[in-house]
Amino acid sequence: MKEKLHIIKIGGNSIDDEKLLNSFLDDFSSIKEPCILVHGGGKLATELSKKLNIETKLIDGRRITDAETLDIVVMVYAGLINKKIVALLQSKNCNAIGLCGADVNILQAKKRDDSTIDYGFVGNINQDAVSVNAIQQFIESGYAPVISPITHDGKGQLLNTNADTIASSLAVALSKIYEVNLYYCFEKNGVLLNIEDENSVLPTLDKNNYAELKRSGVISNGMIPKIDNAFDAIENGVSEVVISHASQLKNMISKKEYAGTRVI
Image (cartoon, rainbow, N blue to C red; front, side, top):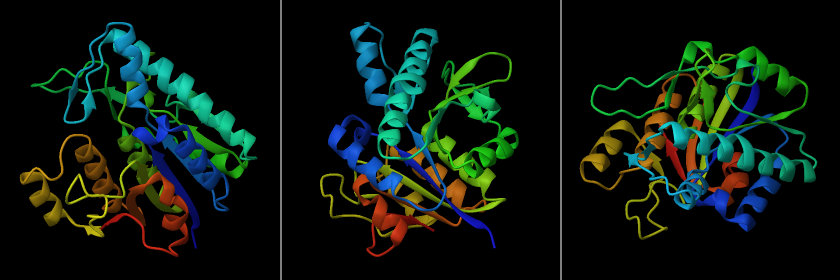
């Protein structure tokens, strides 16, 4: 029987809300099974870009990353946010280790080649090159990896990579040796049928529902890559994928109360 592993992604406004982040990390640090935390942090990167008069461009929720923007996201994601989270977890007796994809070569990616859109220094993860052994060694040593959304191409180039994709790719790779549950935590209660109504949570989401909700515009922008990655995970060996509010982490894991949207 495989050991259980929780891979938890936190992003959106949950990272910017100090009270919510602190409460979320309390819950994270109390989990008994092995855990990996993947984080985003786009809002802080956008704010720093604005201060430096560098324009932020997003297409379908994905950031266009030119050379100047890459410097900013590396500083913010792999530096400020990653180390802030690690320090907070250490204060809660959770022995976290902060990593990006280049560290011990855990996540290699290839610069995205799109004939219609130049995303700049944005990476698509090489699924075959996810270093399962290195991550397993951290887990077996009692460390909680905290992974920022920065990867590398193996030739010295850092790349900005969607944190939802990183969480999904890690979940798929590690599902070969663990029973993996993947949780996407952000500032909404789940996938909403009405973006203005937090109670309009869709309890489950399948491919047909998703296609229709995209066509009608109910699901758009940054939710699209999140849900695409959720389906990729559940179709490739991950045991469970749930999308919910960061405050519901304990409920998602304990299942004592139903929380969020379960991808099926």
